[in-house]
Image (cartoon, rainbow, N blue to C red; front, side):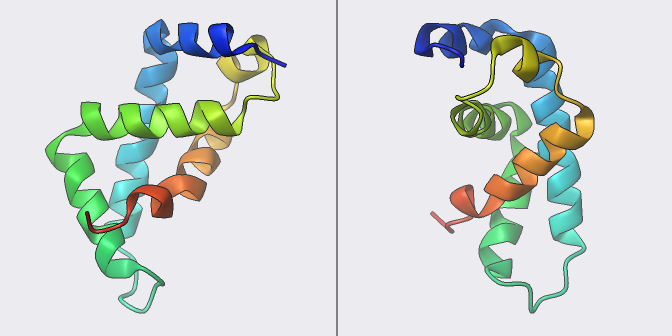
Amino acid sequence: MATYTELYSLRSDSALRNRVMVACIVSAEAVMAEIDTTPNHANRLLWAASVFANPTTESMRMFMAVLAANKDATISIIQTATDTQIQTNVDNHIDLFATGA
């Protein structure tokens, strides 16, 4: 289990941050292609537009949520997560940020 200090230190891991950013962009593209009956679709579209407009800001918000969700993992496990694992984490958190606010 990573300590809070260790989790905080991952903020400086640019490789991991960049991977989360790419996952956010991939998710945003998928949201744009969703059918309009997808739950929370209108807010998800707003989130996707925010990702495309400012991927650095939106991905950093997502990065922090992904770290919190993986707090029980070791730093090594977090840093060596596969692209698929990162994508799944991002996909699972979209509605957290897709609030229309």
